[in-house]
Image (cartoon, rainbow, N blue to C red):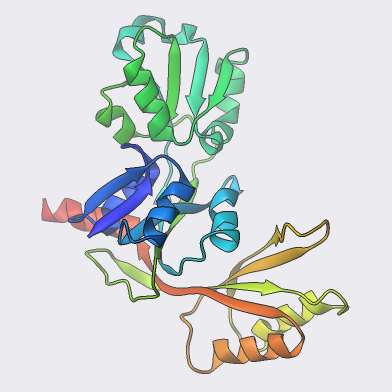
Length: 293
């Protein structure tokens, strides 16, 4: 199989894709929409893209493109621990405190705000499509006094020097990645460690129904369905027009989820199932790989 991911090499998305599809061909794409487009036209079998970060919240470009442009079924997810490091070209080792610019993905920059403010308050910040792209740029421009914020995989992939480890502001930093495919299908365990199930739904509220959101939540509550996430996103049709993304900690069944859908539709809500899928543990995957080696 061919697995698309947000590239280039050395991104956290590559870590997620490699942990789920260790024996498959990984194909990097420059942007999240490009990766999703590749899955939509069958250029790759699956696309692995970031969807949520514990510190910065949802990856809006993923959600918006999924909802408004390419409605691909979600067939799996995995959460990756995030450790950000300060990387420079080896030629800049002796003068790394004199860097004039720091480059990385916007989320990575935001996750390291305290470090940058205290150590490099006056340096220029430039955003890149990914942490891997930032590391690649530093590798290709050894003469520039530029540092990248990226992970250890990027450091090894591009032979960069890690001059400061773990510069992120919060130790519990995690990013959730989803697996998308052209058609709804069952994602096998592919060597990963299954830890549970999730169902993601999109709900739009009727514009003239007072208390509609309360009724939506009640439909889940009395059925004792736990919601791990509920988030509003603009419908892009005007101010005040929103839809809700809801994650239910259960695989879609023949009774409860259809019951919720029927009840919400009776209230005049629009309901779409974006995916019902297994969730995998990155920690258990890496522990298994360590044991095998």
